[in-house]
Length: 626
Image 1: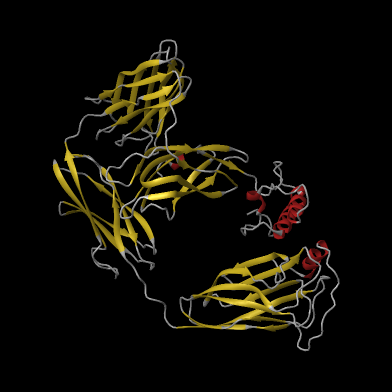
Image 2: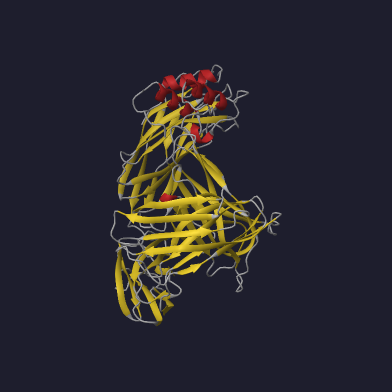
């Protein structure tokens, strides 16, 4: 915490070229007064810090306020209109909250005018939450009022306040319910499945620990313990299930089966689903098909579905017409590394003369194989001629952890059709979009559907360079009724989102799919595209009609915190540039805003100039640019 003394207020006043003050007489002297309140435990309330100049001309003001943190917790401290009562501008020099020791610091000065103010008003409004019972003083200290000449005004009277907290906390209101259950369709007998259950707390109260039970055909599969669930939030509970009988199986999820939690609705604690359990086919290796335009560069995935087999290694040859396609690259997918194990490419060759690819990969350092479907390899092609070419698999081999060949592998060849002109754009005005963003640490960006009519469901994938940035979180308060996020591959540069309507009608206009939080990892100045791929976008009718749409991709650029002028360095020139920007000097209108809030209070102000200068001077306490 830092205090603003008289010398700082004097310096600010000199910069703005103040006029001399002609004080008015007042018997009692100017006063600074803190409101008092009687409140209830758990109540959120506001108190004003008021200043009565009592005839003096006030240009700047500061105070510290001490309170008992076991009784009160400060939520916010915001400027009042005392110093701007005549329409002049002001700047907050200090605004800090310390709920650990129970202390607030605040300082504000007028800017751009020569006179002070003489009418009483609210200097700042403080929002508190009553967190404990009892009485606490609101004690003023380090109070200073200054005149337009940056001179302290003498005889200031300090009127402390008091808050009395009584009563008991409001009752906790909780309503737990399962809102989503992921199921395989179909399920294969004697295969292992992971089922995700979304449990929601529909009320504002926080729930303590409770159980969630999964039953299959009336028999308990597993119990999971949830330690807590805050109000108006969701959590995902993961169950493992292995069906052992062919036919229709009924899955039932029950939340709080032991009635440990008192709820407002005790009748919405179950969710059921039926699953068809069938005999498993053999593993499949599938090549995607595409319709593309001449000159287009595009990718084709080679996908493997183990169908319950445990796969340790895979290989294939792929034939194509080199007069129509040329291969740009062939890169490993995440199929054999889906559990974060290591793998090695045994062969990866490209022959654009013959039109042949060879690829082989095996896991390393682990004993088990993988059982979930995934992309073995991604091939980037360029369409160099018109016509149709098959993508034909041969020499395909899948092996188990004992290096034995797995039999019964089904091969699904692909095809690419190349036309001489690009396909016409899709009709309709819907746009799935993510913006261009820049940050120094973490930043949250929205994924939206713009100009859409009757949106009912969307399934999309976001990809990026994990060497530059990764997704650390997806949330919050989407416009859709339900949002499911798969972030298992976030560290490898990909997340998948599914959002849909359940009880409410379709969405119109600009619709928020999700807010995605990124964490910067790469070097300063590095950038990555933020690419969206929409698998499904349908309306909310029973027919689930596809909605025509386009995609607007974004980017993420890593900034150097404190580099206000964007020259790639943090030095005294940035202090000068920021100061002239705040003063409105011509030629300094544009700054790198994301790099300018160096004290981390969410505002770009004179305090950032001071903080950056002290950081560059190596003053203790200013080591970190926030």
